[in-house]
Length: 370
Image (spheres, helix red, strand yellow):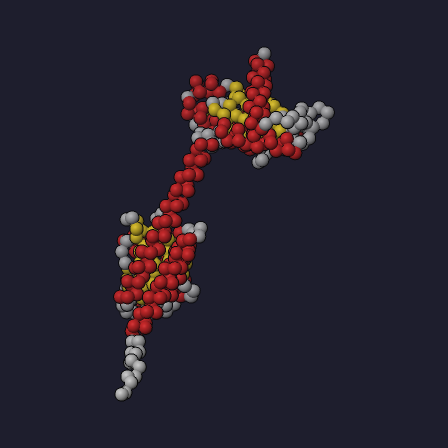
């Protein structure tokens, strides 16, 4: 009895093999997008990944990707050579196929640039001179907005393969999903930053408020105790501020407070903290002042402290022109200097040093009236 031979195995059809290879490339592209999104990616990272994916999957001579920033388009990535030159020209002109795609939110295809010179004259002449004769621009559209565009270039005039345009659209949709994720994440992060800033800064002057001042002062006290270095806290109150408000209105008074904040920041060192407690009261925390001499207060050099006070008084007493009104105010300053040798909790010392500087300021104000 004859034994049956091995079953016939049909060789894979070339079209099936090509389809399998294309599917594998597409899967790998999606993996690349996912890997990109797994890290600290931004919009530009996604768009660069889109350009790389289009280069690998599509039968074109070059690609480019632009990002829409407000009313302008910004080139993010382009193939080397002629495609890059064409994309850079579009970026400079803010015109061309990608500009039309961004404005219309629709696919833009020109199968023969040479026959449509009037459409984008400068771009068309330049592209043709570089050997590019057909272009398609696929907009990246999501939530009713256009986020960018994917440009495809061919050397020969004629229609783009339907499969290439369909694949380009799929890539654009995938990229849009990650672009939106990056956008939403960045929006949430900025909202958190704004909320944190609002909780710790004065809304009028932008200076640290009492909450942030107490935190920084506690840190400064702890550092001074640890290193045995002196720390000076200056409590400032404007003289004549109420009169400015009563005479010229609160708008001018607010402008004056903003100007005072600016002048204080310019008068002290970069490492010093300037804060507004409220009203016309400000605090300056001076760390790491030179060590004291025989005439110093609490370990701070009398000369260095006097220099700080002189700069602040000179800055505060200059007249200011605000909303067409010339105003002048004085300033009363109270000083408290920490004693590094005292072993007290930073939190307790913060309250004490602020109260001491506040009392010193009121004594200075009374002396000025006498």
